[in-house]
Image 1 (tube, rainbow, N blue to C red):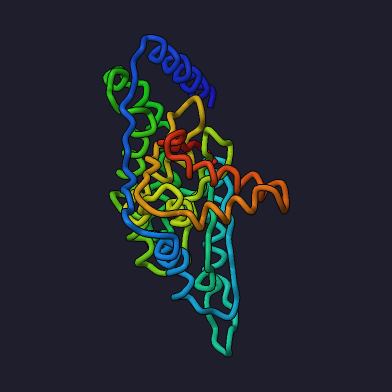
Image 2 (spheres, rainbow, N blue to C red):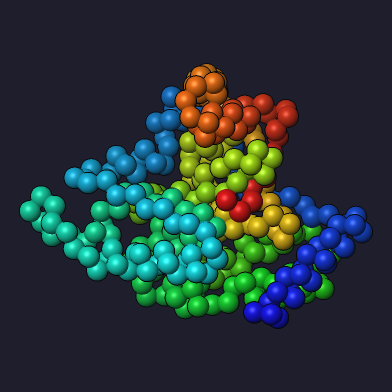
Length: 287
Protein backbone atom coordinates (compact mmCIF):
# COMPACT_ATOMS: atom_id res chain seq x y z
CA UNK A 1 0.00 0.00 0.00
CA UNK A 2 2.84 2.39 0.91
CA UNK A 3 4.62 1.60 -2.36
CA UNK A 4 1.39 2.27 -4.26
CA UNK A 5 1.03 5.66 -2.51
CA UNK A 6 4.53 6.70 -3.53
CA UNK A 7 3.90 5.62 -7.10
CA UNK A 8 0.70 7.68 -7.26
CA UNK A 9 2.51 10.69 -5.80
CA UNK A 10 5.30 10.27 -8.34
CA UNK A 11 2.67 10.02 -11.09
CA UNK A 12 1.19 13.39 -10.10
CA UNK A 13 4.65 15.00 -10.03
CA UNK A 14 5.59 13.57 -13.41
CA UNK A 15 2.28 14.61 -14.95
CA UNK A 16 2.82 18.16 -13.77
CA UNK A 17 6.39 18.14 -15.05
CA UNK A 18 5.39 16.97 -18.52
CA UNK A 19 2.70 19.64 -18.67
CA UNK A 20 5.19 22.35 -17.64
CA UNK A 21 7.52 21.26 -20.42
CA UNK A 22 4.80 22.09 -22.92
CA UNK A 23 4.12 18.53 -23.97
CA UNK A 24 0.53 17.87 -24.96
CA UNK A 25 -1.63 14.96 -25.95
CA UNK A 26 -3.92 14.65 -28.92
CA UNK A 27 -7.55 14.40 -27.88
CA UNK A 28 -9.00 11.13 -29.15
CA UNK A 29 -12.52 11.77 -30.43
CA UNK A 30 -14.42 8.49 -30.69
CA UNK A 31 -18.09 9.55 -30.67
CA UNK A 32 -19.72 9.64 -34.09
CA UNK A 33 -22.32 12.21 -35.25
CA UNK A 34 -26.00 11.75 -35.96
CA UNK A 35 -27.09 13.77 -38.97
CA UNK A 36 -30.41 15.15 -40.18
CA UNK A 37 -32.63 13.91 -37.36
CA UNK A 38 -35.12 15.88 -35.32
CA UNK A 39 -36.17 15.47 -31.70
CA UNK A 40 -38.96 13.00 -32.43
CA UNK A 41 -36.69 10.69 -34.39
CA UNK A 42 -33.96 10.92 -31.75
CA UNK A 43 -36.29 10.22 -28.83
CA UNK A 44 -37.94 7.23 -30.51
CA UNK A 45 -34.53 5.74 -31.14
CA UNK A 46 -33.08 5.92 -27.64
CA UNK A 47 -31.40 2.76 -26.44
CA UNK A 48 -33.17 2.97 -23.08
CA UNK A 49 -36.59 3.17 -24.74
CA UNK A 50 -35.79 0.17 -26.90
CA UNK A 51 -34.56 -1.82 -23.91
CA UNK A 52 -37.67 -1.10 -21.81
CA UNK A 53 -40.01 -1.84 -24.71
CA UNK A 54 -38.56 -5.33 -24.87
CA UNK A 55 -38.84 -5.96 -21.15
CA UNK A 56 -42.53 -5.98 -20.07
CA UNK A 57 -42.39 -7.35 -16.52
CA UNK A 58 -44.58 -7.41 -13.47
CA UNK A 59 -42.02 -5.62 -11.30
CA UNK A 60 -39.51 -2.83 -11.78
CA UNK A 61 -36.06 -3.39 -10.29
CA UNK A 62 -33.32 -0.78 -10.57
CA UNK A 63 -29.78 -1.17 -9.23
CA UNK A 64 -27.26 1.58 -8.43
CA UNK A 65 -23.56 0.66 -8.25
CA UNK A 66 -21.46 3.30 -6.51
CA UNK A 67 -17.78 4.15 -6.74
CA UNK A 68 -14.85 3.18 -4.52
CA UNK A 69 -12.31 1.39 -6.66
CA UNK A 70 -11.90 -2.37 -6.47
CA UNK A 71 -14.06 -2.56 -3.34
CA UNK A 72 -16.96 -1.05 -5.26
CA UNK A 73 -16.46 -3.52 -8.09
CA UNK A 74 -16.39 -6.40 -5.60
CA UNK A 75 -19.49 -5.19 -3.75
CA UNK A 76 -21.54 -4.81 -6.92
CA UNK A 77 -20.37 -8.22 -8.11
CA UNK A 78 -21.53 -9.71 -4.81
CA UNK A 79 -24.93 -8.07 -5.27
CA UNK A 80 -25.28 -9.72 -8.68
CA UNK A 81 -24.34 -13.09 -7.18
CA UNK A 82 -27.01 -12.78 -4.47
CA UNK A 83 -29.66 -11.74 -6.99
CA UNK A 84 -28.70 -14.74 -9.14
CA UNK A 85 -29.14 -17.09 -6.19
CA UNK A 86 -32.45 -15.58 -5.04
CA UNK A 87 -35.64 -16.90 -6.60
CA UNK A 88 -39.01 -15.13 -6.55
CA UNK A 89 -42.45 -16.14 -7.80
CA UNK A 90 -44.07 -13.80 -10.35
CA UNK A 91 -47.28 -14.71 -12.10
CA UNK A 92 -47.12 -18.19 -10.65
CA UNK A 93 -43.66 -18.84 -12.08
CA UNK A 94 -40.35 -19.05 -10.24
CA UNK A 95 -37.59 -16.82 -11.62
CA UNK A 96 -34.21 -15.52 -10.56
CA UNK A 97 -34.41 -12.04 -9.07
CA UNK A 98 -31.43 -11.16 -11.26
CA UNK A 99 -33.56 -11.75 -14.35
CA UNK A 100 -36.05 -9.13 -13.12
CA UNK A 101 -33.50 -6.27 -13.11
CA UNK A 102 -34.58 -3.54 -15.56
CA UNK A 103 -31.88 -0.92 -15.20
CA UNK A 104 -28.41 -0.51 -13.65
CA UNK A 105 -26.89 2.91 -12.99
CA UNK A 106 -23.20 2.98 -12.12
CA UNK A 107 -20.20 5.19 -11.47
CA UNK A 108 -16.44 4.72 -11.11
CA UNK A 109 -15.52 1.25 -9.77
CA UNK A 110 -19.13 0.14 -9.95
CA UNK A 111 -19.12 0.85 -13.69
CA UNK A 112 -16.58 -1.91 -14.30
CA UNK A 113 -19.00 -4.52 -12.93
CA UNK A 114 -22.09 -2.97 -14.51
CA UNK A 115 -20.53 -2.67 -17.97
CA UNK A 116 -19.18 -6.23 -17.90
CA UNK A 117 -22.55 -7.63 -16.87
CA UNK A 118 -24.29 -5.51 -19.51
CA UNK A 119 -22.10 -7.00 -22.22
CA UNK A 120 -21.67 -10.60 -21.07
CA UNK A 121 -24.50 -11.36 -18.60
CA UNK A 122 -24.00 -14.67 -16.74
CA UNK A 123 -20.51 -15.04 -18.18
CA UNK A 124 -19.52 -12.54 -15.47
CA UNK A 125 -19.77 -15.32 -12.89
CA UNK A 126 -17.15 -17.42 -14.69
CA UNK A 127 -14.35 -15.04 -15.62
CA UNK A 128 -14.90 -11.56 -14.12
CA UNK A 129 -12.88 -12.29 -10.99
CA UNK A 130 -9.80 -13.39 -12.91
CA UNK A 131 -10.05 -10.81 -15.68
CA UNK A 132 -10.90 -7.70 -13.71
CA UNK A 133 -11.67 -8.15 -10.02
CA UNK A 134 -8.52 -9.85 -8.69
CA UNK A 135 -6.26 -8.54 -11.43
CA UNK A 136 -4.23 -5.53 -10.26
CA UNK A 137 -5.35 -3.08 -12.93
CA UNK A 138 -4.32 -0.12 -10.80
CA UNK A 139 -0.74 -1.38 -10.66
CA UNK A 140 -0.80 -2.04 -14.40
CA UNK A 141 -2.08 1.48 -15.10
CA UNK A 142 0.55 3.07 -12.87
CA UNK A 143 3.34 0.99 -14.44
CA UNK A 144 2.19 2.05 -17.90
CA UNK A 145 2.08 5.70 -16.90
CA UNK A 146 5.54 5.57 -15.32
CA UNK A 147 7.06 4.01 -18.43
CA UNK A 148 9.43 6.67 -19.84
CA UNK A 149 8.50 5.66 -23.40
CA UNK A 150 4.95 6.85 -22.71
CA UNK A 151 5.89 10.31 -21.45
CA UNK A 152 6.32 11.69 -24.94
CA UNK A 153 3.45 9.80 -26.52
CA UNK A 154 0.60 11.63 -28.23
CA UNK A 155 -1.83 9.54 -26.20
CA UNK A 156 -2.94 10.67 -22.76
CA UNK A 157 -2.98 8.61 -19.59
CA UNK A 158 -6.68 7.88 -19.95
CA UNK A 159 -6.27 6.60 -23.50
CA UNK A 160 -3.68 4.11 -22.24
CA UNK A 161 -6.15 3.16 -19.51
CA UNK A 162 -8.83 2.55 -22.14
CA UNK A 163 -6.44 0.11 -23.80
CA UNK A 164 -5.85 -1.70 -20.52
CA UNK A 165 -9.60 -2.05 -19.91
CA UNK A 166 -10.09 -3.27 -23.47
CA UNK A 167 -7.35 -5.89 -23.13
CA UNK A 168 -8.68 -6.99 -19.74
CA UNK A 169 -12.08 -7.95 -21.12
CA UNK A 170 -14.07 -5.14 -22.72
CA UNK A 171 -12.42 -5.42 -26.13
CA UNK A 172 -13.89 -3.20 -28.84
CA UNK A 173 -17.48 -3.81 -27.78
CA UNK A 174 -19.85 -0.85 -28.12
CA UNK A 175 -23.10 0.24 -26.48
CA UNK A 176 -24.84 -1.12 -29.55
CA UNK A 177 -23.50 -4.57 -28.68
CA UNK A 178 -24.81 -4.11 -25.16
CA UNK A 179 -28.29 -3.18 -26.40
CA UNK A 180 -28.49 -6.38 -28.45
CA UNK A 181 -28.39 -8.32 -25.19
CA UNK A 182 -31.71 -6.77 -24.18
CA UNK A 183 -32.57 -5.53 -20.68
CA UNK A 184 -31.34 -4.58 -18.21
CA UNK A 185 -29.95 -1.42 -19.73
CA UNK A 186 -26.74 -0.01 -18.24
CA UNK A 187 -26.23 3.70 -17.55
CA UNK A 188 -22.57 4.48 -16.97
CA UNK A 189 -22.16 7.89 -15.34
CA UNK A 190 -19.33 10.41 -15.44
CA UNK A 191 -18.97 14.11 -14.60
CA UNK A 192 -18.90 16.97 -17.08
CA UNK A 193 -15.72 18.71 -15.96
CA UNK A 194 -16.75 22.21 -17.00
CA UNK A 195 -20.20 22.00 -15.41
CA UNK A 196 -19.59 19.77 -12.41
CA UNK A 197 -22.76 17.95 -13.44
CA UNK A 198 -23.57 14.33 -14.23
CA UNK A 199 -23.22 13.09 -17.80
CA UNK A 200 -24.77 9.68 -18.42
CA UNK A 201 -23.89 7.39 -21.28
CA UNK A 202 -27.50 7.27 -22.43
CA UNK A 203 -28.72 8.13 -25.91
CA UNK A 204 -30.83 10.84 -24.26
CA UNK A 205 -27.60 12.67 -23.38
CA UNK A 206 -25.92 11.86 -26.67
CA UNK A 207 -28.92 13.36 -28.50
CA UNK A 208 -27.98 16.73 -27.03
CA UNK A 209 -24.55 16.53 -28.67
CA UNK A 210 -25.99 15.00 -31.88
CA UNK A 211 -24.03 11.80 -31.43
CA UNK A 212 -24.68 8.07 -31.73
CA UNK A 213 -24.13 6.18 -28.48
CA UNK A 214 -24.52 2.78 -30.15
CA UNK A 215 -21.11 3.12 -31.84
CA UNK A 216 -19.26 4.32 -28.73
CA UNK A 217 -16.78 1.88 -27.09
CA UNK A 218 -17.83 0.62 -23.67
CA UNK A 219 -14.23 0.53 -22.43
CA UNK A 220 -13.98 4.24 -23.12
CA UNK A 221 -17.11 4.98 -21.08
CA UNK A 222 -15.78 2.90 -18.18
CA UNK A 223 -12.51 4.85 -18.30
CA UNK A 224 -14.42 8.14 -18.29
CA UNK A 225 -16.43 7.03 -15.27
CA UNK A 226 -13.23 6.24 -13.37
CA UNK A 227 -10.94 9.04 -14.64
CA UNK A 228 -9.92 10.76 -11.41
CA UNK A 229 -9.20 14.46 -12.05
CA UNK A 230 -5.50 15.50 -11.92
CA UNK A 231 -4.32 11.90 -12.22
CA UNK A 232 -6.12 11.25 -15.51
CA UNK A 233 -6.92 13.45 -18.46
CA UNK A 234 -10.61 13.63 -19.40
CA UNK A 235 -12.37 11.55 -22.02
CA UNK A 236 -13.40 14.03 -24.73
CA UNK A 237 -16.63 14.00 -26.74
CA UNK A 238 -17.29 16.16 -29.78
CA UNK A 239 -20.44 18.29 -29.48
CA UNK A 240 -21.77 18.05 -33.03
CA UNK A 241 -24.16 20.47 -34.68
CA UNK A 242 -25.77 18.01 -37.09
CA UNK A 243 -29.28 17.47 -35.72
CA UNK A 244 -32.35 19.41 -34.61
CA UNK A 245 -32.84 19.55 -30.82
CA UNK A 246 -35.21 22.53 -30.57
CA UNK A 247 -37.84 20.58 -28.62
CA UNK A 248 -35.22 19.40 -26.13
CA UNK A 249 -33.97 22.96 -25.71
CA UNK A 250 -37.50 24.19 -24.96
CA UNK A 251 -38.08 21.37 -22.49
CA UNK A 252 -34.79 21.96 -20.65
CA UNK A 253 -35.36 25.71 -20.58
CA UNK A 254 -38.68 25.16 -18.82
CA UNK A 255 -36.94 23.16 -16.09
CA UNK A 256 -34.18 25.65 -15.25
CA UNK A 257 -36.44 27.85 -13.12
CA UNK A 258 -38.81 25.39 -11.43
CA UNK A 259 -38.64 22.28 -9.31
CA UNK A 260 -35.87 21.02 -7.04
CA UNK A 261 -32.42 22.58 -7.05
CA UNK A 262 -30.85 19.37 -8.38
CA UNK A 263 -33.31 19.28 -11.31
CA UNK A 264 -32.61 22.91 -12.18
CA UNK A 265 -28.85 22.32 -12.11
CA UNK A 266 -29.13 19.19 -14.26
CA UNK A 267 -31.32 21.00 -16.78
CA UNK A 268 -28.98 24.00 -16.92
CA UNK A 269 -25.95 21.77 -17.50
CA UNK A 270 -27.73 19.80 -20.23
CA UNK A 271 -28.94 23.01 -21.83
CA UNK A 272 -25.34 24.18 -22.19
CA UNK A 273 -24.76 21.54 -24.89
CA UNK A 274 -27.08 23.48 -27.20
CA UNK A 275 -24.44 26.21 -27.50
CA UNK A 276 -22.21 24.49 -30.01
CA UNK A 277 -19.83 27.42 -30.42
CA UNK A 278 -19.05 27.89 -26.74
CA UNK A 279 -19.09 24.17 -26.00
CA UNK A 280 -17.58 22.37 -28.99
CA UNK A 281 -16.32 19.57 -26.73
CA UNK A 282 -17.43 17.79 -23.57
CA UNK A 283 -14.73 16.72 -21.10
CA UNK A 284 -15.65 13.81 -18.83
CA UNK A 285 -14.00 12.62 -15.63
CA UNK A 286 -14.77 10.38 -12.64
CA UNK A 287 -18.46 10.62 -11.79
